[in-house]
Image 1 (cartoon, helix red, strand yellow):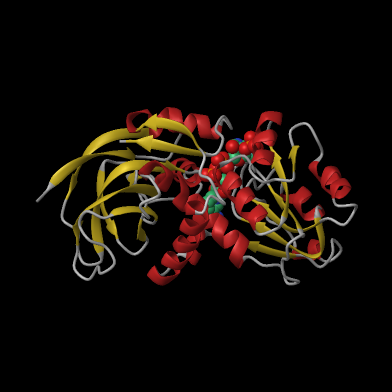
Image 2 (tube, protein in one colour):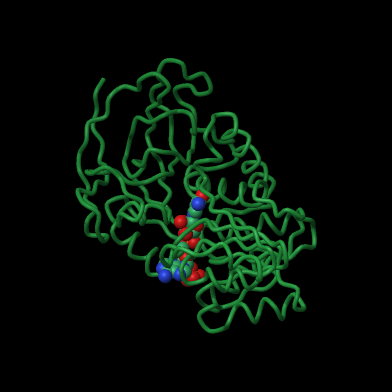
Length: 330
Ligand SMILES: NC(=O)c1ccc[n+]([C@@H]2O[C@H](COP(=O)([O-])OP(=O)(O)OC[C@H]3O[C@@H](n4cnc5c(N)ncnc54)[C@H](OP(=O)(O)O)[C@@H]3O)[C@@H](O)[C@H]2O)c1
């Protein structure tokens, strides 16, 4: 059976206006693939990087890395999914901005009954990222309950999930966010203190809050604007986890600067290294599902847009007008 689907395409990288809705054919899943009909689609900052060409894609390109829906057809060799399963995923290749798609099954996970489609679409890419940041990016001296960490963009999609999860692990989270309202939201989601980095010098505030010690880990997804300050917030042997570029990419730097700042460690992480196998994906998803179903982490779906209004959704995300997670509804 061949059907068709609406899908968001770009012909060349560009602004939000580069995205257009087109009707595309959808075939049967091949070996290792499934066909999924979406009930909700997750919006992520990586979609902006794909759209602008910061992360280049072959053109024309489809967008979107996250979604939730129902399995309609299962290809040869897929053993963990059946027709009718409720599922959610964060996965390559881009293409979740659509009604129905065929895609590799490897990163597709069955949703627990207690987790709805909207929640599922809002939490997979962001929640699996929070999972690896907190569980797999460890400073050399370990991370114990009571340790201070710094999390930028704490009121965003990844931010609100990571704040809650870090708090549940006993970490003391200093957040940053771009308005006082966003700071209050991050504090309501587990940040012990949140600094408005548009009105305050976050390095001075972090030093004051930690009694001059600094933090053990910085989780930095803002990139260019926070990079230098983030390094100055770290304790000796502290770990700088760079995982995004919302303000622009981090410029090249000389490793020599890390010595005098306290023999610091720096890593640049991407979720796709962590979810490179079915087993790892499922183990991380099970961990995420358990903190969500137990109520330790609540998924805050703060914005909903129709799929056809994807341009407006991207404008809001880039203009720092969103909080928590944003979904598109097919
Ligand atoms: N490497 C990975 O594995 C991975 C996986 C998932 C996400 N990420 C990264 O994590 C970050 C968060 O992703 P998300 O989808 O949850 O987005 P988000 O945090 O909901 O949105 C990005 C936030 O970044 C902040 N920001 C600071 N400077 C900005 C600027 N110049 N322009 C736009 N935003 C700016 C804004 O919050 P304030 O107004 O509060 O500053 C904005 O709301 C992104 O950088 C993303 O690329 C990385």
